[in-house]
Image 1 (cartoon, rainbow, N blue to C red):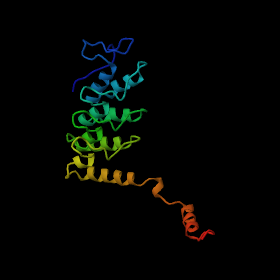
Image 2 (image 1 turned 180 degrees about the vertical axis):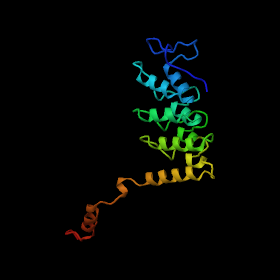
Image 3 (image 1 turned 90 degrees about the vertical axis):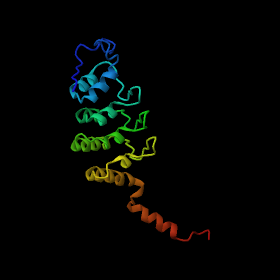
Image 4 (image 1 turned 60 degrees about the horizontal axis):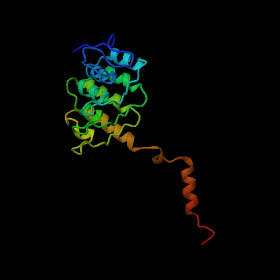
Length: 185
């Protein structure tokens, strides 16, 4: 793993000064997520300079995409605590979200499962986003990965039930009132 650090890289405007390798704080964020360097991600987020947590590289991969592709669980957990991150961003190559990529992570099945669990905690995550091939994250899960399949099935089932699907006590009263003949008949 390539170690990077924030110290001495930033000028007062937030641009990175390290041999021209990184030109923006946003690019440093992506590199830190790729290498799961949570200390660097913390430094970037706490920096007085602004950083775009939804910044994407030339192919449309965000910090979440890098965490999902490279097993950056520690960085992902930090990002999960931040407001305003769009968990449903799709990259330009395949139209994959971070969840599409995470369900395919194979280096360490436990890490892959933990990444998916963390992504499922993000507000607004959409499990039905289709990539350019018409595939949802569930379509991309290795069918032999029972733990991942079970996790996604549970999340999909939980997402299918919303407050409007759950009857409350006064729903019965409303139905009874509708069944009574009206005076106009």
